[in-house]
Image (cartoon, rainbow, N blue to C red):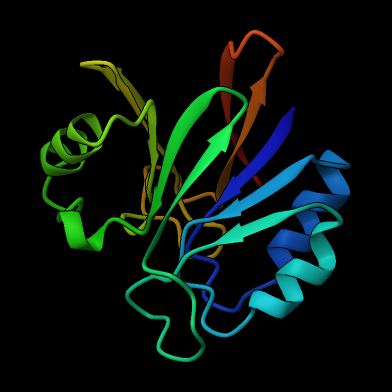
Length: 160
């Protein structure tokens, strides 16, 4: 299974179009919040099942604050992250994910890509497709690949 993980597009949808053109088809798209009303556009363009949760800038619509999904045999938490204060550190998110039995917790909000494995939980942040804050400030996303044995690989990718 090939999964596109994005976040913090802030209604600047042209970079999603660029990613989809560059990377081809996906089996699933996950957006971790701050769509700012573009959810229908994203669902239409994705060409696959889509999961979207709300971010701290998503005031319109009825997007859920977080979701629990299964990817293969892995239990995954989708959250924007601001309720777990991820801008300060990810300790609270990791503790909550572990306590609730998640294998993976995906979050956004910081606009910095990161994959961090530890204490039985993998934390995944694709950064931002619109307003990157990491060194080099290139829009970022993650391609997650999941095989039939639930072996996962993550690739942080950047747009030029």
